[in-house]
Image (cartoon, rainbow, N blue to C red; front, side, top):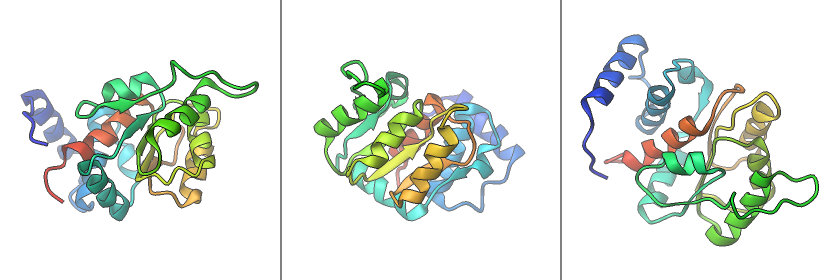
Length: 190
């Protein structure tokens, strides 16, 4: 995707790079890390994010081949600027004891099927529900935020063996999750 980069964004990246050295990161990992740091102004993501370059490369190829992007909540979907996004949270009717976000994951899977890029930035329960499905994702960007279950759901994602981007701490959120997928959509070369 070719896009016009605003001077404010260019200045933000210059400041970021003046404060932390990302030059040793593999190219797609660097793209994701820098976009997440740019979106959050949190340099801690440089060491907190967990990326696998091969999984990122496969995800970029899947996105270029038209893989569906699925978001757990509308705030994540709104932040993805280069692609239509499936988000079923408004339509979800949770079963007793289930969250709306977890129910939305089930609905979205019925629509998206295998091979989608899943972007979870809000609800740890959505990430846990996704891990429990046989979704065969191209990539899971698991960056939910919170003190209840966020770090644990991301650890479960990493332990699942699914191709993923996550982080170790409790931080995360819609803006950083959208930033991570945008980084992959904006990449011009592999």
